Image 1 (cartoon, rainbow, N blue to C red):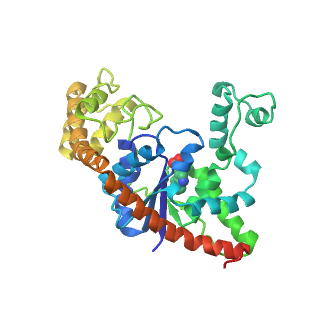
Image 2 (image 1 turned 90 degrees about the vertical axis):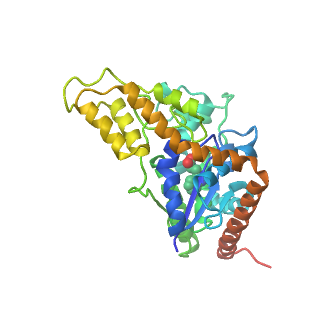
Image 3 (image 1 turned 60 degrees about the horizontal axis):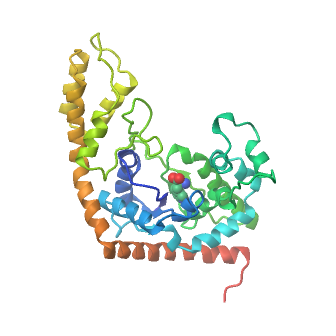
Length: 351
Ligand code: TRP
């Protein structure tokens, strides 16, 4: 069976965009592939070197994954820092990774600009390099940030995974992972690591829009509805959704904010409900207040049982400890197997 690995950084809570864009796919994938899901707590050190409570943040995501229906008996969920084998592979990959190629990745440049306090609006070609090498600059960029893609590659190939469900924003990191796998094979003259492919599971993944007029739902967009949000919060967020004064001609095309409301309804409401409001829209009789009330109710109906499970699971630390421990054991077994081979291939002696 093909191996699937997916990691998520523990920075916050899961929202509807995460659920319909990723987690819902995981629920099915866990039955079709050898899946390993992990929480990338080391990666969060690249931007937050002094996390307030990193274990707690990891357990938040763990509780939410479990509440959504990931079954740790068939798909282990582990915390990255519980699998130290990853770091050793990370070291070997760093020996064959180039500083130049790492510096050229867009996510490095973006985050380095933040760490260097370079104004995003006025960036120029070479600004990051210039500031990094400027000795009078009091800000610095960590080597950990530079090698973010190496660590991610190690996460993936330590299990010899071939499929990685990720968002489009991870394409460059995935390209690096393939490159490092290929380079390892070439360097040591072996055909050992398979090249991992991004896996969009596109027929299942749904892009959830934000309700603030344009674009997708996201944590950093500040427009997210979280699975953990209570009824009142959800209602407030939905009622604030951007609308307009309504169509003036029958069967008008829908402007983006309105189309987004409908897309959301398509995702969480019944077809009858969707059709009802769609007909009202086409007849120029739509009342957005009513539509939003209905949408808020339907989002609530979807989130309420998940929220209840999250709260119950999050309160059961013994259970979370057990899931994390068992996940780590399975992940370490898989990782150690790969690492033993890697050591042998490079030429380290095994006693
Ligand atoms: N970089 C990923 C993100 O920001 C998180 C991640 C770390 C990851 N390691 C991974 C995703 C390995 C997939 C596989 O979302």
